[in-house]
Length: 342
Image 1 (cartoon, rainbow, N blue to C red):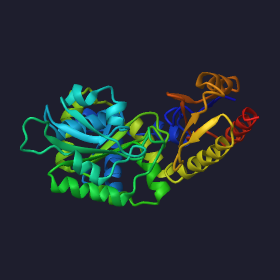
Image 2: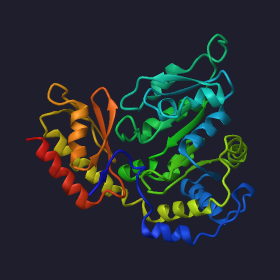
Image 3: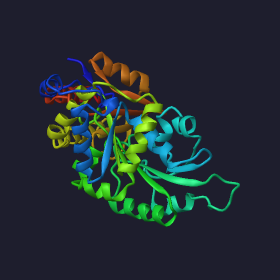
Image 4: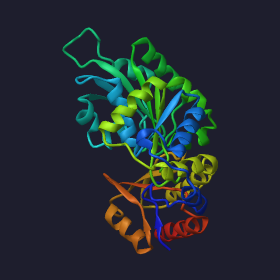
């Protein structure tokens, strides 16, 4: 039995999802003639109560498109120091848009409205970059799957309104936050100028993300997607997976969250574990006591038991639960951890 917990991107389509993909009605999406893609885009837009959406090959491309549309070269966006758009998108902010990031020292990837306001450069001070955009990530990947307080998000929204800033949500794992916090997706649609959501993480699709916003934004995003090479042809086979996931895989995220919390409880009882970050969703980040065991040795011992997790450097390790992580795997993994703690 192989157990892969390096990410929630390692899943395979379920039998039901595969059936939906095989039966998909398709066309050429570059001509906007793929009925399954059109249906997915309408479904996601309606889910958030926004005007329109656009299907992308990846979340990085969706985020980079939004940043490109909201900024000019030389501008600056504000984000937390843990933000995906800064850490894990290959420097795309500068490469694609000529924009710099003002990094905020938040808590587990989450900054406050006060911190955002303090980070805005005076618009008439031409010596500094013009602040034009605020980017939020919910849940926070590097922050251990943490969920933002929606009231704080609303306060940041007011700061954006008062300072003529655009407001983008990298919601790659927003589904997890919605389930964990029992929130209404339309509240997010009312608050943000745009939202990107990933179908290939918690929802278990093989490929794809969706950018949601106003009709004007999505019309412009279509051109940027083309420039970035994101136009796909019979992508309805992939969109059908997304439609199936939206109908069948959102509520079950609570199972991933529960398993993650149970793993966290076992980790807390292990003498070689120095700290386990708070667990709200499906990501567990913990720190080893390197005087007792090195990261390399810990990972190797798990590998001997056919279990894969990922190192994040500086003694931190990450586990991510997901659709393909069964109860049988879960029981076995907990047993292995308990053996390691002896």
